[in-house]
Length: 111
Image (cartoon, rainbow, N blue to C red; front, side, top):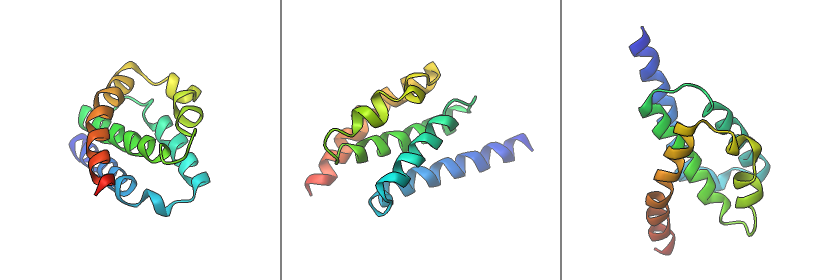
């Protein structure tokens, strides 16, 4: 059963990542901020590595979305107490994935 539970968590994390990556522009800004808070709270849990990676990718996608609004990234994410108190594994995963996703995001945005 534990294996099935982890599979469900991974499926949910993957679905969240894909939805944020592809459809975040359809979400009103206040809802995106609420989503950010919820995602940061989830990342504080003890997560399997694959789930942590997918949720971190979702957080990176959300952060990249906030760069579309002048001056929003720092107050919404970088100065956010919940972000600053992430467990070390989650913070490292975020900062590891950020440059890779920035490159992909920049390429698709210019097309």
